[in-house]
View 1: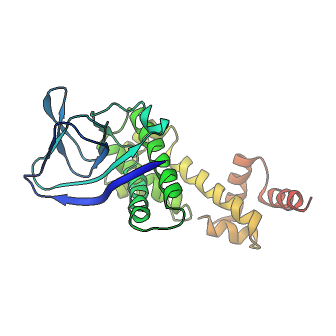
View 2: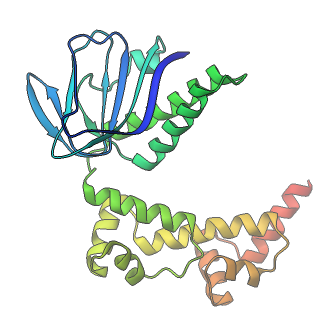
View 3: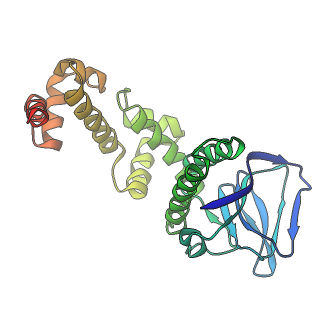
Length: 258
């Protein structure tokens, strides 16, 4: 289990903000929302927004605002859990966070759990911290994180949360204010799948759910998943699943009844 001493989200500091602790007493995790200067290998170095750094107990901590107010999340805590004490994360060295929005949600939940004395407070915080450190490990071993990556990730999240919208390469390109050709190139390079393939896969995933667990007709499912043409929906569904929507629905219901 972990003992949290203090945790804050979206804390805004003045432009002259400085943290200078020669030897910190506890673990400290800092996530930046704006650029900041960190003391690394004997010198101050500038790191962009969405950087994260983990300080070990007794380690020197020094960072400061630069070029305006500094905004960050941070947790000061104690723990003897191996997923923290034996973490591969480099102590005191910032690295880019791969999914800032996901981590923000986890940190907000940790803040909520920390401030209230609920029955399952300790175990809830432990599970949330484990999920957060899983994401930190993923981030540390990912090497293509750029400002452009964050914009693409937001677009991909919107697509997967709203697959039934009228998505075209042009509308997705407009979302990022870039050309359709450039979007197709960088999207495939970043995620290993084309933007339209992502849309189609998201639609078929949603269609499976509705075919199995709802009483809607195939035409209604097709419309809900963003298809204006039922035949087109059936063709794409079979290409991806190997079954027509009707056969898929029948087999799913047969399996549920056995």
